[in-house]
Length: 505
Image (cartoon, rainbow, N blue to C red; front, side, top):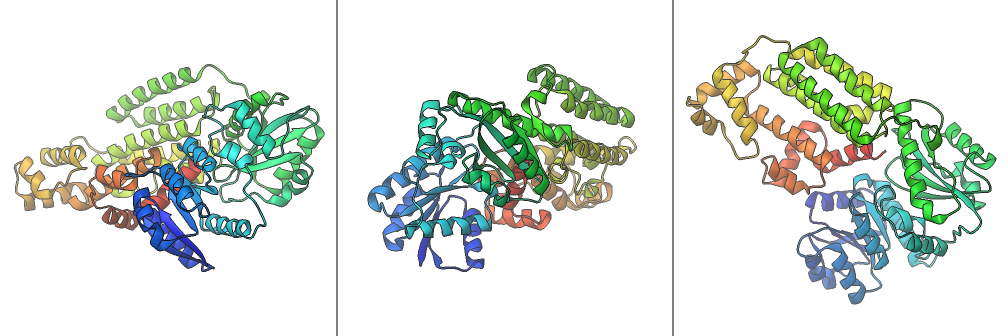
């Protein structure tokens, strides 16, 4: 029986791990939970777990210090770390301290946990050993953003049996279709056995392959492999330039990633190689141009000029097809800002109940390529514009003042009585007036506003769940989670997983 302890300062995550393991019965048991490293140490002697799954960033004592102490206290105990995309350097340190493996928080699924436990059992039976490999070398740093010590990196690769001497290499980035989460190993099993390709897994639906070849990226071996990959799977493939110097390894990763991302904007073409991407202008020029267009768009929205609104939105979207770099996060941010601007006008018009599904998160999740996303943005924007086409001064001055007060104080424990006092009317009268003019009662409007703010924080920040709950007016995280699931159908943890998985494709 494998005894497991879960250490994380977010209770919903501990609960989720327990739920996953309990609904998939096996030869394991959760013998303890802790909210920080110190609490884990205090209960370790009593629980005596064989495996500790721990977060890295926690109050009181973080995961790094916990690993150091456990390796002295009980060196035979295996440790697995939970990481966010912003914690690769810490995860790398944890592996060097003796952690067995890591699990990315935003993409972990039931099967990932079960596969981890299976590998751990095989390791305990002596069937596999802990050998530094590609996963340690690359995935515990962000190959796109982090600065890498190339000498150290190449040494680690040599320990994994990969030698760059007299070899040409390229990096291949693969982005799988929306519904696929696993790359079929049989697609390239022969190439891996022959040492032509080395596979590592990155974000959900996204894979990296290091190809060792005899000539260059257009060589027969690479082309045949890519053709076979795309015949079997619906995927985008980006290939870096070919190199012989291992010092260019990180550059190759960035090139392949850029080429792969660009396919989202190019559409359903078969393959993107870095040399085929034509970039116009600089990244700052693109941002400045979009910023100017957004200012003009805001003016048109305030003027309620429907035709011009749609014209400016189309112009903003077109900037991404002609820009210097395909950046999905920036695209998502811009789409979110546009739809939130229009949605705010819709709420003021009293049609907030019709906004379900009209947000950038669902668009990014549903649309496989840029042309689909662009069309979806224009369709939703047109629907929102129609909803905002209402007479001026729809609301009385009392309701307008109420809406302003809610917008400025939603994160506080405000009540209808407090607002009524602020706008100098009876609370019963305000309740009826608000319902008559907006079509929603006060508490429902406040809840929807808070949840919209929470969605933005979940998708755009690494704040802890309890921090987000507090920032939107819910000091009780348990209550926040129940309300969030009631209105969205997902827990805050699941919602963040879904959104981030989409962004990191």
